[in-house]
Image (cartoon, rainbow, N blue to C red):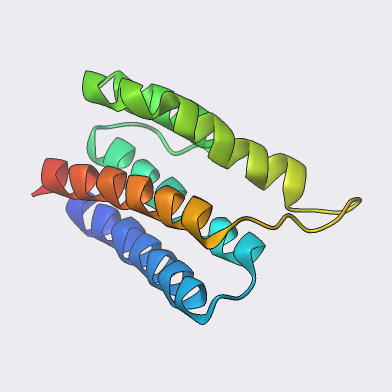
Length: 127
């Protein structure tokens, strides 16, 4: 049962990640690309943590989720700064007031690559 729930989290995370890659390929809506990357990472991290026995919390803070993940896999420490940036985007730049953030394609590609690295490591842990 737990494995099925984890798979559901991962599947939904994969959908968000695929949407982010598609939007990036269309070179549109960098803020929406980052939103979907955030959602994907959040869902993969929650799936992993649930697999490890973590009780689901309704949070969107990637830094908190990475910190929880570090309790099980110390190597995720290297993603702590990345998680802070992704969370800051989600909290500070997702909603008005203020202009919509614009990130370069290179910046988004770097975020996408780091995210894919995280996702692949999480997938390896669940196999």
